[in-house]
Amino acid sequence: MHLFLMGSSNSSRYENQKRRDWNTFGQYLRNHRPPLSLSRCSGAHVLEFLRYLDQFGKTKVHTQLCPFFGHPNPPAPCPCPLRQAWGSLDALIGRLRAAFEEHGGKPENNPFGARAVRLYLREVRDSQAKARGISYEKKKRKRPPQQHNPASLMPPQAPPESTTGASNHDQ
Image (cartoon, rainbow, N blue to C red; front, side):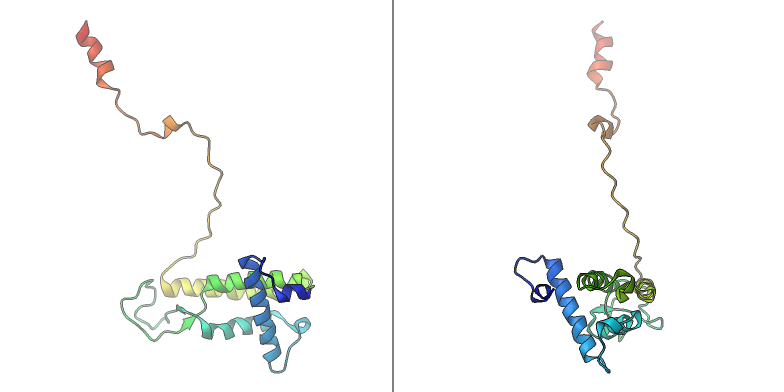
């Protein structure tokens, strides 16, 4: 269990990020007033953590009063706040969910999988999509490529003239 906290040079980028995220969340719990143990942590505490992280965000999220609300590439600066991007929060929660269970937490008690956290992430996604004028479509699952005859992929072509016209002229 402690080996995970130490990290190793053989860990994948994902594992290293998950370890850093877990350590950051642990630090957040220790600094919480009053200090909070993991066993007493709830979805509400996770939401508090996500809102705390917003101060370090780099994604401009326009308010409804901003003239650039709904524009993905605004032509000028504005005073709208910087926030954590939805995709970053979504990935963070996925890593923390996994880390919680790897550290002995039961899936049914996982605060990172709480309904309130899922709803918050959906709300952040939708509000950022509106504010930035972009949509987050669910990625379509790639289907295995169909076995096509390469000739069927070619556009239809007129038959060569040598076979149609030449035989009539030769006779």
